[in-house]
Image 1 (cartoon, helix red, strand yellow):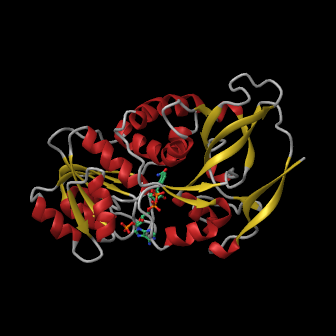
Image 2 (tube, rainbow, N blue to C red; image 1 turned 135 degrees about the vertical axis):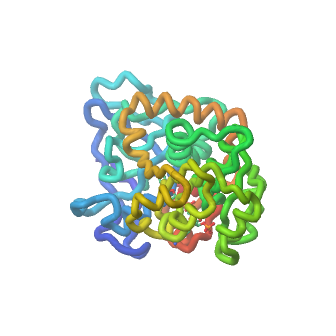
Image 3 (spheres, rainbow, N blue to C red; image 1 turned 90 degrees about the vertical axis):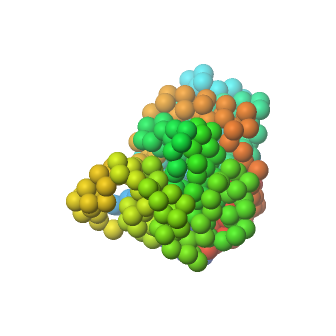
Length: 335
Ligand SMILES: NC(=O)c1ccc[n+]([C@@H]2O[C@H](COP(=O)([O-])OP(=O)(O)OC[C@H]3O[C@@H](n4cnc5c(N)ncnc54)[C@H](OP(=O)(O)O)[C@@H]3O)[C@@H](O)[C@H]2O)c1
């Protein structure tokens, strides 16, 4: 057994349930690789797992090491592993199809099924990889499967300065769309503008529907919404006929049940609620999607300059700050 440090919870609750503990790690089993983490992503889903009852109908067996996503170096491999070699730089997002049920990234080291590991290209740092894999593939799921922006489109992105929001903003701009983004404050507006945002709407101070209509009276082609409860239904009032509404997250809480007739009344709209687990469950698809993502990062189309770091042992503070909406851009924990 190897002793490593990590962040574990013994019950669901607020950030106080997180504790920095010694964790016993067995040698990697058949098909597994031991990864020494160098950069661990904080995702909003980690907060949802910590709070409990969000994705799981049945309670998760405790204790849980939080986290789904990290970059690092292969330290050793178990029997039969041929996909990766000791010393290679790798990253992963989840270790199974419903990966919110199999967390464990908030630790200095972890054993991961080798088939889930993607090799990191030389021009993408560990910090960049941990900043973009889950958040960027969430954006990729939307852009490649649900709504492909076109030159001349105008898109509304809620919480445009969030980790996913900044990536969506840059990706929509890459395809030539104009982007209106809601943001919590002026500092976030500036960060989003630095990533290409055309119009910032301070949605805690102004009515965003009126603000969007003032910019584009005919409505936006698509709404990309990771905020949920506070924004999704009102967004129907600033969407163009035949427009697309995508709710990909619930930072403010779940979207209430929607009467399908509303979609007709508000302009023959379509509505999506993607989940990245389905998109990334297949390890072969995960790796092929990472190729496009890493090319966009390596070529500077998707910038990660806003990444903020905390020591892994300070993950409790990082969660508190995330829940207080204090972050702009991705957050990475350093072991
Ligand atoms: N569908 C999927 O598979 C998938 C995958 C990854 C992430 N997500 C979702 O994508 C969203 C963004 O994730 P992220 O990791 O990029 O998050 P993040 O960087 O922590 O950003 C979340 C932002 O949401 C806004 N917000 C509005 N109401 C909030 C509230 N009550 N509490 C906290 N924040 C609030 C804040 O921005 P302002 O201050 O500008 O309002 C905050 O900065 C989350 O909802 C997450 O669950 C979904």
